[in-house]
Length: 197
Length: 270
Image (cartoon, rainbow over all chains, first blue to last red; front, side):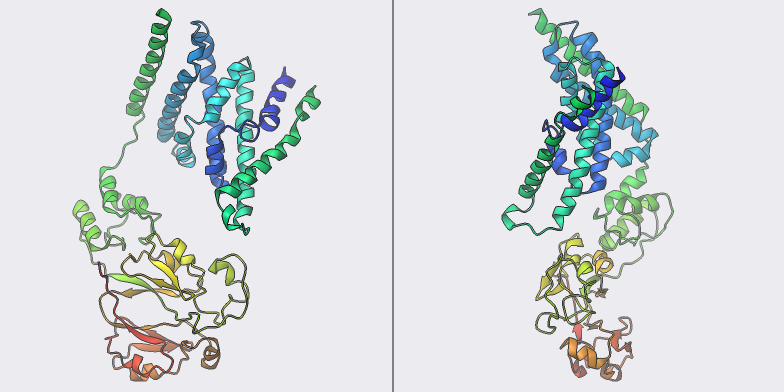
């Protein structure tokens, strides 16, 4: 059981990395990875929201949608629930934890309807995970997002001090760098299966 | 048909619950907001430049509303109008702001200064100045890579012939460039009055300055002797004008052998 959960966690972080293997959540990946501290703030918010979203959508799916044969409503219901939930959390944080609220700042509302957050809850359902497995998968996905963001922030800070040909400056070279980082993550293929297989 | 109705009802119910929950939460967990602070914040320009000495417009508004400071005239970009508006809200005396603009005190352009090395590193004054004192011969003058251009929130600074210049129409005297310039070449200069300005900050001895820049102050003291108001002093081989004493007569400009001192009358056109 424990072995299986760790296997799910590592798979979500490395081989099935949400940004670099599944290409979900590309817009924050390109948008907020310019500096290391914003990248870390964004990733922390993503981990938080992913775990929270899974914890809430799992019972809704299992006890409401599946019971009533309404699985096709998953996308719309999940978006609704996640958006409302994050708003609620934001209000509560503002009242009781202003420091955390200021640290997460704009990133919390930014990721409410992010495709990576929605993607992880839908994929949990599609993979038939139970609650513990879903939670490990979500946290792993969040950690994978953080790994990709932090690594890529480092790459971009290096890019800033490089002389890039004029036609490649800005987004083009960023996308090239992103694809190279993505390719490098292919190296993890099979590694988790070999460890736990 | 009934399945559609169930689906609609379910989504509507979830939406309603979420909406009601948020509405209640926003009331229950509401954070009290200081109304004076919001009003004061609305008067401030919102550039977050830090010229007032606080972290930004929010910080200054908070300090005023809480009574930590009674000075309404700290916002230089906002000028007298802002000071009066804040004073009106808080019931304090507005105080006066002497209108000023920033000016770059250097004439070390491409005609006056030659380059001593070919610099191909990062285009930043702060970094370039660490490599043998920058690419130009004068180690006190403007490097012209535009650290100030980037930091200016009003886009008032531009580079002309390798030296930064400030458009007085756009400058709001927020001091961001003054804090940024690694050579400390930018000063605030009084607006709408004629004053003498020393366009050099080279503190090397005269002979050395002469080799570095054609328009550098050589500390010859002619301006000090010529000044009828005793407003000019020479410290460390470089002239300095006391703007309070200067009457803008132009005697110093007439005698300066290198043209390092000039009479400025900066006006805003709109």
